[in-house]
Image (cartoon, rainbow, N blue to C red; front, side):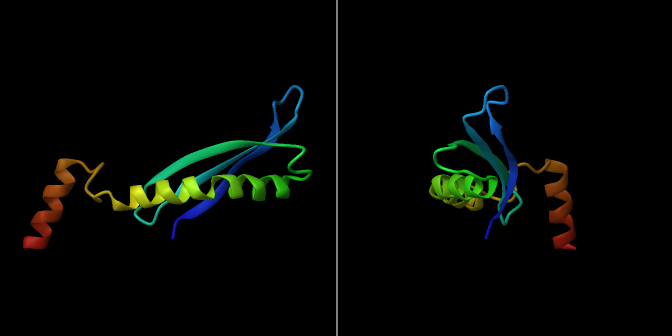
Length: 93
């Protein structure tokens, strides 16, 4: 199960806020990561905790979809060829 961490929670826009910007860093089980954020108006949330909950509620489906796609990718993607050869040599003894 992916870890979802609140990475941003602040009034937005900063000069004359009308709501919150809530951002999440997501870490998949295979180590892949991504960031997503969304505005939440003061009409929807009065406190930062309400804003975080509302943002997660709005983004949950898209986060779950993206996590599922990323967790299907090969663990070799992003590895240097040198690392792959070393792993193969170790496993072949």
